[in-house]
Image: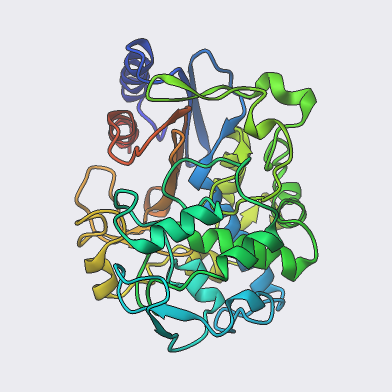
Length: 387
């Protein structure tokens, strides 16, 4: 046994308390280590319940990009201008608090690598609305640029989305600063254009079908809506079963639009943990997975952070769509551990050194990185390791 039965019982009891006290409506957790899989289902959900996985979409979008790079259809350091002419000849704000027309020319073109590492020059601005003039300009365009939970019914179709985004100046020079979220949204449009298909169709061909992810997509088919759980925010209904994910969105959001199940996402996660293999089938090469899960940020970009002071600190970095642990400062912080969370109540990380993947799925919207449920889950996972 690679997992302690006593530790797993203690973990289940801890998770059940979070459900019983009303902190979340129900949850599914999966821990897989050295071929052993442990699943807990607590509350008003089932193992096959469909969840809105929010920003856990970002690693999937990055993996699709790596598949196309391996096929020679994209190159990491090529400018994106050919596929995204809306981003050619960028202008950059002279400062974040400048008026939107107070700009200078970009020093260089945006590349695919910039999109993957969130260094294209635009991302979430985590300040009260109205703090900076550019916030009002962006809000007026209704692009859903990352300052709140995903809302598929809001943004326009991809070409119009890119046209509107292309009217905004960059906030920083390309490659200069890590800023969250927007890189995945732009990347999704680029991948759709590169394949000549919708983002969802491209994901299905290159990832979902090879991995058997039959319940993952950008909306839930009518026949499966009974398996979609409701989502809450601040104790109130955020999205109903027949809500925003019950119909195909105009904009398939590479930064946060997917729905999935515990077993579907486990297939994706274990493929990465196996260095790109799913059973006997290779989905990505080992070098592609290693590149995707390596920290690409400079010391200055770590110091500048992207959410709040100390977000990266001395022990965290960013790969392609995933956070990467670079030093141990918590029980669960093994160097080389990677993964990401979702703002609607989801969390996933792989730990290659421990041959471990773990997933937590619930549906409570909010800024959850330090949510006690997450902390207790990951503490309990690592306390259950038995070898």
